[in-house]
Image (cartoon, rainbow, N blue to C red; front, side, top):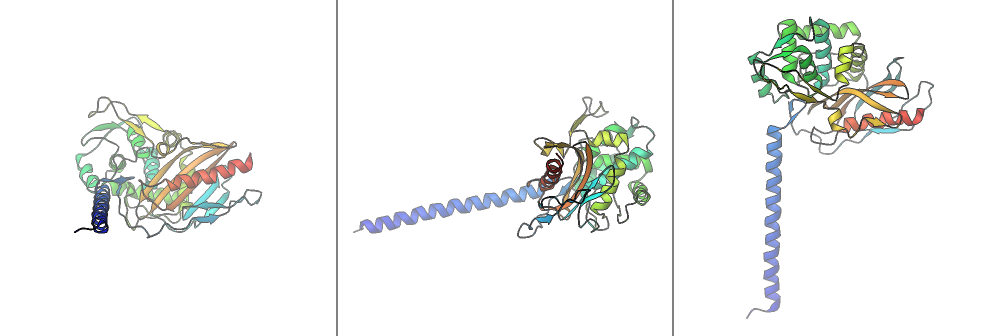
Amino acid sequence: MRTRATRVRRGGNRVFGGILLILTVVVLLFGAAMYIIGIIASAEGYPIEFEYPAENPEPVEVTIRQPESEIMPEIFLNSTNAILIDLESGEILLYRNGTDRIYPASLVKMMTALVAIENIGSINEPVLLREGIFPPIHDANATTAGFLPGETVRAIDLLFGLLLPSGAECAIGLAEHVAGTEQGFVALMNEKAKEIGMNDTSFTNTTGLHDSRQYSTVRDMAVLLKYALENETFERIITASRHSTADTSGRPGGITFHSTLFSRMYSPEFPGGAILGGRTGFTSQAGQNLASFALINGRTYILVTSGAFGNHFAQALHIDDAFSIYETIGTKES
């Protein structure tokens, strides 16, 4: 005869078994989801490789010094490398591993855009996107702006497609149009880097796809952005939050792009100022990178950070760092 205790015990076993089954299903579904994300996800044009440390690195503690050498409150950064400069004076106000080599990821596209602008005949001239451009960038899971193989597009629309949504086909299309081949264009990029004082930078491609031979420093990237902002076309593009192209041979209605920087912000404004523009970057090897500039109480500042932990699906820690630094300046100077 079953006792009440026996029935309760067996009923409890069935409940425990049910819970265990549910937990097993949840774990399997989560694993499947992560596998699918790893296949289809693209972060700034690169396949996500989940090769991160077991734990999130500790934030980096830095101190900003005002031009008058007044020490500002300590700030905790997620980025391992950072430099902040006053655009007008060139004075360095924040420096963290500024000359250590980094993988620049899509920050490379700033140089691609600059060299294209300086060497192209007219920003409105048509550019043919050769069909052979597309298979390699698709194989690399590189981000594209949405143009089609064999399409003819205005150079200015390719430049917006390069700097706003980070289109790899735009980078290679512009490179081939200007120099005949991507590698010929890369030679121009390296020449420009030396010309403007980027002392520890080597470019191997126009897209920022990972290559161990392609490296820079946050100091050099700040030099690049400072120089590039003197070009009106570059400044107009990198400060845009969105852009709609003209009709193309493949898309009669054109395409609308959105900035990878502004699209991840609720608002670019903060106490004392606002972020004016910038270029994001990510690879699993580089971490989250950001080159940005902001107007704060009438003065313009350039900030370049690299190495923030995470990916494009994680919190935008590189943008968090930018707001932390810019807000500190705005509060201190107000």
